Length: 112
Image (cartoon, rainbow, N blue to C red):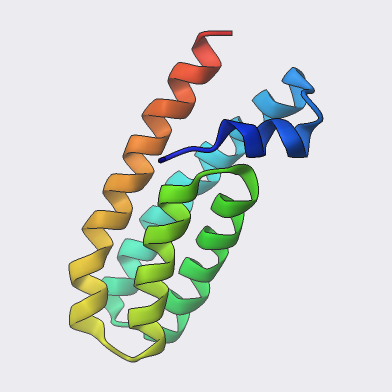
């Protein structure tokens, strides 16, 4: 499941306004983080890649964006193991998960 809306409802106590703000902030943050992550990969900065993907993973799991969290964990694991080819292989999968999640969240927000 790419997004766990039950998790979102649980942390928001079903506060629709809070959910909207949280999801909007998450989408904006992911856009900036993905752009920066791509730069870090180009720079081959494995330590910063590990830190960035760790943050993406935590933010994603906390709101219910499970697929993004899972893919961030994969990139983080490669970065931790100093495996730049593995990072480069997994990064497009993470970015695809972020795009999929953006679409799901935007659809959710616009359906309210």
